[in-house]
Length: 381
Image (cartoon, rainbow, N blue to C red; front, top):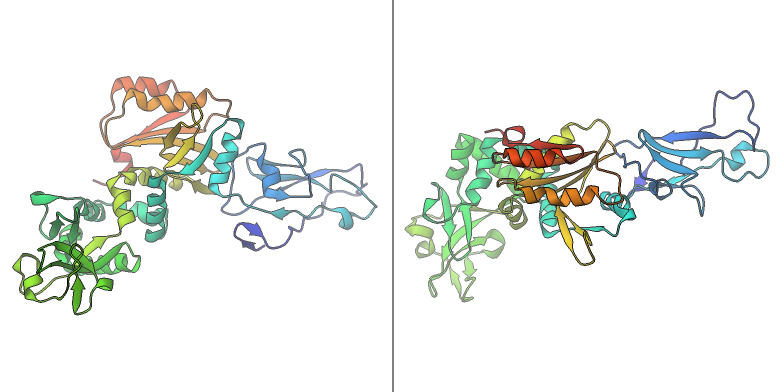
């Protein structure tokens, strides 16, 4: 059946039972189990009526989410007449998005959810790369990850082919910088073309203003035979005197899209790798909402950030990601979470790129279903 924006275009044609010799309406009832490919919500009591629109006022007694799909009561909660086809319920289907699913999970508490700024950067980065699998593979591989590392470099310690512009507070890469990471200029050119097509990179020049001496990067959309200084707004024709470092000819310099820069600079790449690994374990469906804020977590107005929030084959998983050493206080949020009147998450994941102390391992072991992921689990080094 067809869906538009998560809603079925037409009602689901409920099948008639095949193993009854006789169906006595008003006496025979059965359950129909429905599986939606690529969609498996958690088994929460309030979700059945949100997904299956049976009839006005239907409740959790007529439908529910089971471990293997969505189940609803047949032939109908109300029986009028004696023709099965006339009364057989035919639900419309709606698939609540992942944030709605998490709001349903927290419904028994005062917690509500929203994406943090980091979550917005994360989602935009995933969209640019073409999906979590594409982003995860790019960050996992040492060669391509080193390209992103170069965009984080500053000052005199920058590698060859990396140009740090102090006034922009950003590093820009030429083709040689890409080639040093991926092994050849041909491979570098192919990678650059791919990332330009995905709008992960932008191509431009670093130019110096002849009036105020500002060096800055200018994208192709800001250039013709002229450019306008980013500081003093002087419009000038660019010639050899405007090239970076006295070059005879200009060379392309590539800028990382700002949302991708923020994603990587804020270490959300570790969250991406945890989600990428968890998704690889999925059999039926994987839904995720990275870097979300849990509003009213301990009291009204107080929020806590949840790095990893996902649903793997209907099982809820939460997690914390640190590129620094995990501290004992990093467990406090989850200790508070499991004390709330909520079903415990199926898994609690702590991920870090640093060594883990025995003290933290002991603290973590007291949480239900807690586990650890370290750098070797997540990156190719």
